[in-house]
Amino acid sequence: MSQSLLRALQLLDLVATGTGSLGGLAEATGAHKSTVLRLLRDLEDTGLVHRGPDHRYVLGAHLYRLADLALEHVDVLRTAAPRLRALRDEVGQTVHVAVLDGHGARARATYVDKLEPRDAPVRMASRIGSEALLHCTAVGKVLLAGLSPADRAEVVAALDLARRTGRTIVDPALFLAELQDVADRGWAQDHAENETFVNCVAAPVTGPRGEVLAAVSLSVPDVLLPHEAVLDLVPPLLSATADIARDCGFRPPPQTSGGVPL
Image (cartoon, rainbow, N blue to C red):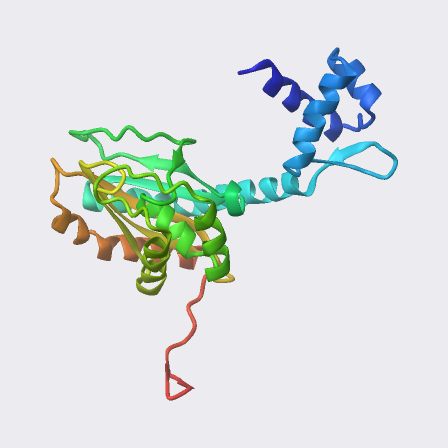
């Protein structure tokens, strides 16, 4: 870990415990005031600290949002764990869970859980805590499709739609159309768009307010199953995510006929 990152984390801890003046922070860290001020400005730019009218620093609103999201994600994972294990055992493939954090250019998808089948003949290289590309992974598409059309457009405008394979969608208009299709049908696929030898399908876990809490995917190397067989995994995937969403408090609106609830 770099010295600058360590100092920035130390500053966050100090601000959290009440050391808010520039001089006090410099003294506590043993760093020059100019160094501390530079780090504080970086933390302020990202919303992690805020300088009040008295020129003292306090924790920023974005840090509270991150804490709230972290607790929410922990609750989702705890709730989802038994059903995700059952899904993994039912289909015999690797299950990933990813969440979205940040807005616009700062939007990121991160893997927060990974369940590999017992005695898996092929191991996926992904790991918990690593980033999932938004434009060419099934989980990335699901998480973006869960945003409003305006927010989707803002994120896509900031994305580097780098071509990973011959199937990667690199045109912003086509990618936005793909996200609308994902939102309409309720699941996404990565048909060898990120890696030529892996196909994935993913579906959202929906929260009490209809928001997308997480994306759950099944990732399958083509040496195990062809693309068509991976698509056959969509029904059990949707069944699992529907069960998890229900356990997280989501209740789908009642079906209607001519405006009258059935």
